[in-house]
Image (cartoon, one colour):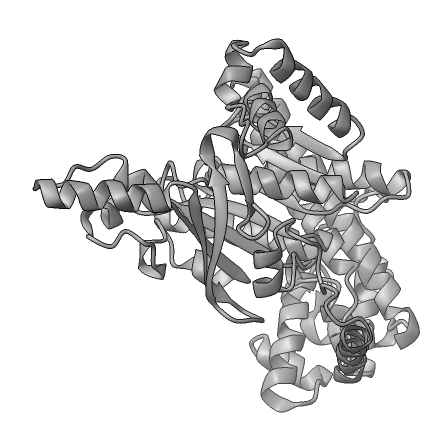
Length: 475
C-alpha cells in the first residue's frame, strides 16, 4: 500500500501489509469477516488504527448487515477528510485498504499469521516484565508464577484455535455414532471406568472433556476415593495425572500401598506402613503391592502452592511427553481446588478467585480432552445441621462450581460424625453405637448433579484407615 504507520518494523513481530490486506478483504467481500473473526481480535493488530477499523467493520456489519467504505467512514465520525496519518485522510485510507484486499481464500491464513505475531509480541512483553522483576529483586517464584500465567493465556488460545468448529450435521453424526456404539456394545461404558461399578453405572464412566467435582468436608474420604480412582485407572492402563497440592508423594504412596494390599480380614493401615510397625508377612504384602504397581502410568505432582495456570502447564507438558510415546493422557485429578493459589486478577475477592479456578479447570478438561476430577471443600455451615449430608448450597465460596461442573459428587461418611458424638441418654448412646456398627465401613457417593445423566446415591464400602474404597457387592 505504501503507507507507513506506527507499528514496529520488526518483521518477526508484525506485518502491516497483512493487516491491511485482510481489512481490505472485508470491504470487498463482507463474508470474509466471519472467517477472520474466528482467528483474531482487535487487540491482535499491531497498528492501533487497524484494531479500531476491525472493531468498526464488525459493528457496521451487526448494525446494517452490509459493510461499505462509506458506512465505515460514517461509523468512525463521518469526516472522510480527517487525517489518520501524515498526508492521508480517513476516506483515502479506507479506499486504499479496499484496493489492497487479499483474495478471500487467503484471509484465514493471513489472520492466523497476524495472531502469531500478536502472540510473539505478548511473549516478548512477558520476558521484559520478568526482566524488570529480576532487576527490582522480586522473588524468583513470583516472577516465574506471573510469567506462567501470562504465557498460559497464549497456550490456551493456541489450543482452542486448533479445535475446529463443527456444523450441526457433523455434531449429529457424532451423536449417532456414539448411540450406535452403545447399542452394539451393551453394558460397555462410554467413558473410562472409575474402578467402581456403582459409579460407572450411575455416570457412564469418566468422559473426556468433562469436569467432575468431588466435594466433601474434611475427613469424609475425598482423597481416599480420588486416589482409589487414580489407582484403578492407572491399573487399567490409562495414564493418570494426580496434582496433590495438599499431600506429599510419600503420604500418597503409603495410602496407595495400603489400598492395593487391602484384605478385609487382614487390613494394613497406611500409618503402620509410614511408621514401619509391620510384621514380616505384612511387609511382604506391601512389597508385593509395590511390585504390582511398578509399571502403572500414575504420575504424582506433589508441588504445593501452584496456580491453576501452573497446574495446566505441567499437565500439558506431561500430555506432550505421552504423545511423543504414542500414548494418550487419561484422567487429571486436582486435590484440591480450594488450595490452588489464585492469580492476582481478583486479589482477595474469594468468590471470584474460586470461580476463576473452577472455570480454568473446566477449560483444561475441554482443551486437553481429558476427564478432570477436581476435589473441593464444603462450607462448615453444614456441621450445624442435624442431617450433615451435603447439598448444593454447601459448595464453598462460589456458585460457579455448580455451573462449571458436568457432575458433582458429594462424599459423605456418617461414621465420621457418629465416632465424634455421644448420646445424651443411655438409650441414645446405645442407638449411636448400634448405628456406628452398621455405618462403620460405609461411604456415600452422592451424585447431586449430572449434566448428562441421573442423580442419586451410590453406596460404597470404605476402610478409611487403609484408604480402600470398593463396591459393596463382593466385599
